[in-house]
Image 1 (tube, rainbow, N blue to C red):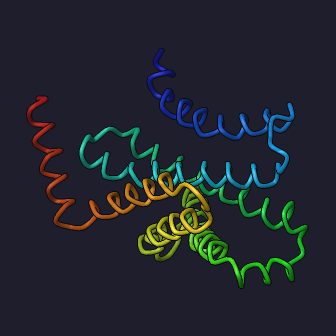
Image 2 (cartoon, rainbow, N blue to C red; image 1 turned 90 degrees about the vertical axis):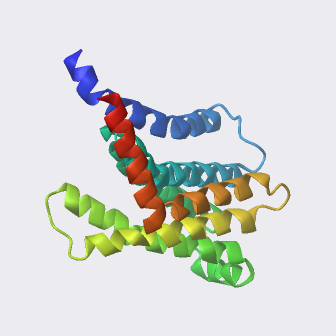
Length: 207
């Protein structure tokens, strides 16, 4: 019971983050993907990535407001898993879609703006991910405090990528964009100070 209290949040977050990938693998194994499985994998890994990026982005303001330690864990793990799905998303594009033919990929980039936005988001997230791994191994990364702010433009670019590559129904990508914009807005200093005061008042009322 003590172990569950200490590690329960860690286990639950990991399981929830891995489930979409297992679901995708099972669907592929059982032949439940469409006639264009490469596009299915591309769409689903991209969706899982932006969901987890949004969850990670929400972890900080929720922690300011509620003060639960597991929210910081949620922020970190969701961010790491989000990057994992981004890697799968990019690998599926370069490997299964283009067969590592970089000439075709370059030609496609020139006419498809959503690929530019997506690759730019990946490039911005890569140093943040590598620095995060180094910190986990007790290896200080110079400038980490500023480096992690790359996540903000990366998430915005991911939202732009989602909008541009959606051909028909824009409601879902626009909804994600609105939530992401809100989560970035609450990080402005005067909004954060208000959230901090609200959190402190909540703690005082609980005591």
